[in-house]
Length: 344
Image (cartoon, rainbow, N blue to C red):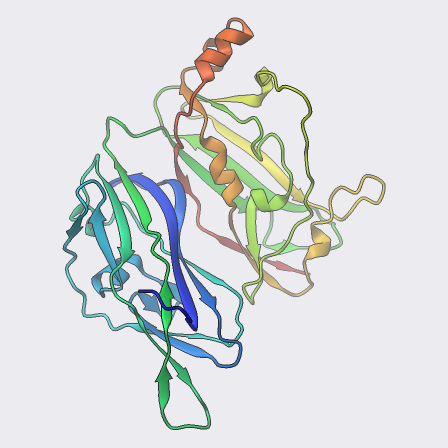
């Protein structure tokens, strides 16, 4: 699977935990990265799971087509996946192209996964076969196959049982309008709504997360233009000096059944006096942008405890530190679908 002088490299990445038959995940979305080394010629990958109509990858088809294999991580046993009649897709990678990332999304509610996975088990998705790749020379009739390097890192999956599943939250990110005026009037922004799906109160420590200490809008929203280029928002760097004390009470948020936690994130023109804002200057007029929840926001729900805020923050600082020491593990997050807006 490795070549000392590859023309192109493929990487897998991601570590995901979920509960079968229930929407939502904990962890990072699996993805496939393509790194192009050839700066003179385009390369076509003939790769199972790639869907040319949507320019995306289908993870079940990649497994059924033999590109990837599913293993029980503890026994290192390969799990048989029923084949599919779907044909591999052709993906053209231009010469000298920048790295490309493709999400390998899965739906835990799909029977495909419930037929293969068992609650309480851990799994790995690994490379099974090297896809075909060829370099086409427009001045020749034939096409030459090229060497591919497959990096061995797997995608890791953990399946919660109902008894061990962490709290479940719904995250919804929506625009205040379908049109963004780059003049700043009327105001335009993103609205975040978070709802607990549990029947008991959950308290989360949001200290040093984007919901309490925002460095840049990319922590909240990933925004890309029509060419797939990600918007680079202004970024502020925070610093801390000396020993850090236990977070203040306002760094904790209590989520109770039926109550919606809401935050607004406005896109503004730069303020020359304070150097704040500047998001609107990073976009161009007459463009259409795609928005999805940012990875920084997804990582904000990793320090939680069952119970109300008053109960969990009572006592001395030492008692609170003991109560909140150790990781609770990432909560399961059900995230809203991407949306689009246009600029004028």
